[in-house]
Length: 74
Image (cartoon, rainbow, N blue to C red):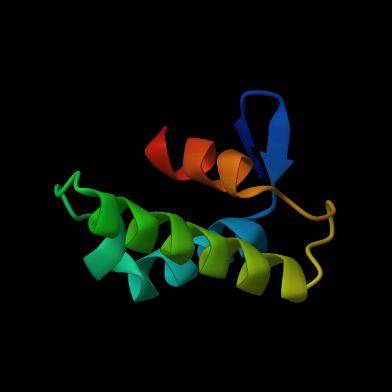
């Protein structure tokens, strides 16, 4: 069964892919630092996750980093 995130449906494969990519960037994404350099690294990590996710050609089409963040943070 596919998981739905605020109107956007993710297949089981897409769910696993997102979580695997986020896990690889966990050091940056889980940082509690809010200084300019840390925020830039965090944004870069989300862009990396998004690019790699979309490069896999998800069946439901490409996602934005905002959509992926929303899915992960639910």
